[in-house]
Length: 340
Picture 1 (cartoon, rainbow, N blue to C red):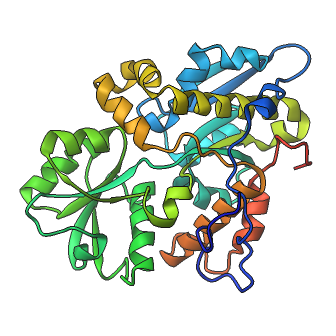
Picture 2 (spheres, rainbow, N blue to C red):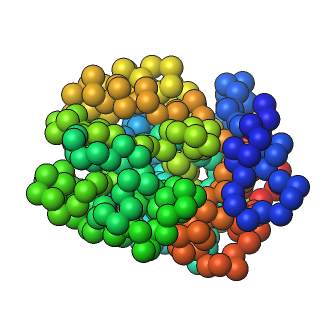
């Protein structure tokens, strides 16, 4: 399928639009089934953050025998360190792959970590809230107001700053970001320290429902309804030296995403012990996410390039960074057999 006109086109690219014919990729089940690594079962280490429902495909793959079907013996490592530490762990062989968020990974990858993004997994887990009765109904209503974030490099902070810039606001002058622990953002909002906050699921949806907050916007609207936000990164040396293993772990996690998309309630039950949240609430989150959208290949390259260009708008990426060149450097098309 062709992307709707302009849907993937970041600002600043010269005409003709290089994204005009970019495919939205939903990898077929037949291609995933053929992606098992040949030979002896590979042992791999996969990092994930067990508190983030974005990575629900990891425990699904582990509990439903998906890794085994792809001839993999996967050790899961629950990693709670910084993004730089995570990417260094993958790049240096302490882990073989990891799942994270594009808007947190792209800046460190610009700096040269030997990690290749082989797939996106889904979209739709970032949300922006305000108090009911505040009169705030759209992002531009936050002009001149304070917003909360769990940290100053948070992907949701980056995302809503990008959207604000696209809507004509100056993210540095028109918005003031203040940092609070994620579980205290709701309290900071009620105290009046901030007038809104950005956060990711599952905590975002849980606080919204608990406190009756207004969800002003999210990353499921407009052009971002067809954009993923979470990605899989594989050790660069693994891609080069054992491409079959890189292909297998990528295919396994994409198969798990399809499983989540088809069976969100069952996936919520699998994830519930990590979230300590009710299964119905987790199910609603998974149904709102786009687990059926997981681009690879050229579609992934175009989505990464779009984010890179947009991060330049909010001064996260260097102004002279070429989005297409960097996206070529940091991604690998392991499912098609095209060399990295």
